[in-house]
Length: 151
Image (cartoon, rainbow, N blue to C red; front, top):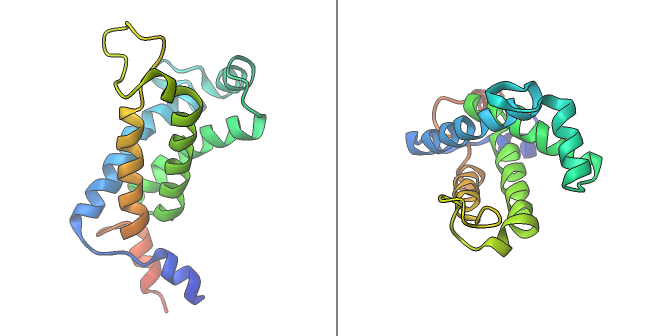
């Protein structure tokens, strides 16, 4: 296996990093399942693409990426498969969400429905968990750690 791939998959075998990875994956999964499959009251792929491109004005490739990152990224994070890639993808995506839609609404989420939109506190938590996984790897009990051990 090439050194750079092995380095990318290398992980700190700490259970805490596994917990961060699992939490991130499990929290994002329902959002991805809404967007891709229409589960949990979501629109499914076609409806989400329509909403993201027409209503929000995102380019098609960005809308497609959001759906794929949330669905396949969350599953991959739970399994610990290419976790650094998916963590970087989520951190980048949520940074974009903050800049484009949440910054103007302030820090706090719209708990009481009295804001025009959501604040960025949830997104910061996602970014923090993603950066922990990005820096430390998948942690203990991950496919990444199994692949990294192959010579």
